[in-house]
Length: 416
Image (tube, rainbow, N blue to C red; front, side, top):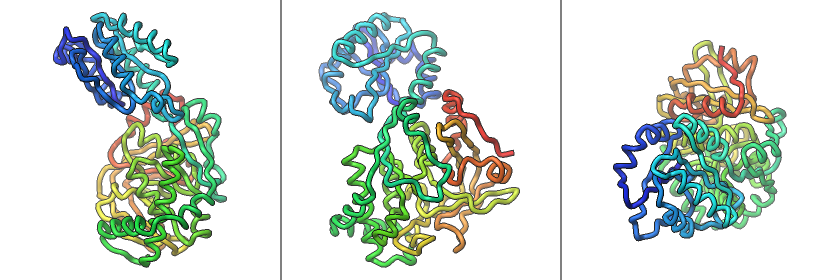
């Protein structure tokens, strides 16, 4: 979350940080806010492509400063379907901040934009911001490339619910557009992508140069559709691409996740929403994986694609089930991880656990990337599991996830 604090020329940045020290500290810690301060004495108009998530009005006398910032912004982009249309302001009332906020609120109404002032104690402001931004931060456009895979009989999400509750727009994408894009992709561009992959890979096992080229074309085709449709995330019925084009989307999904477009497999919307949530509230890319082997002390998960940035090293492999195309075998560090799943047609349940990786094994009996965590998932998975796929993210983030879930009324499944 980005918060811009506005102050008048009669005060300094130091004054603002001292006067609002407690609130700023809580915004940084509890809302993960990146805070910047802008003073009205700046004669050069601050420029930005989009507005910050929140303005904090620290003093009076900043109304024209706000107007200059507003007029410098690409308002059309700010009000596009995948961006919030509400301007949120914080004003606790000190230093004429509420008076200035009311003037700005009226100005926004005059130009046809909704505004909202968060006013009250620090507890009230932080609580309101966490609840409001937790929902607003999920706004976006998600592309559904084909229908969910046939074996996913319990992994859908109510699309009307997503739109009404979180402002998420879902767009149906015909897989024939991907097939056409692969056929028409630039060979030169695809060769550059393949060469970059080879340069960073530890080894190449099954794929031929022709396999690498076709996988790179799939990446270019899917990325172009994402750009044209202004997608923030996607899930794809990937096995149909294997059958129709003789290649895989595993490499494409790995690269798109690293580029900030959340990308999942098999049309699994519940797992995609899990990935989308952790990207927005934790800032982490996610490994979407199948639970594959369970003991009383550990759990191994595996899949054929993973964001390359999560791995210490990568090996270029073929797709496990089909033996076709390009998949990614990622060698993950032995570090702390969070295992997470958000599920139900109306996303009303979740599971989260923190664990350490104790092994990054390899067996020919499972998908290419494999990781073993020191957590016993048998009681949860074998009796109360929220679907098949779960996501793994670097670091310990259970607290952030639970706070979001508490605000949004989801019930937790526990591993016991």
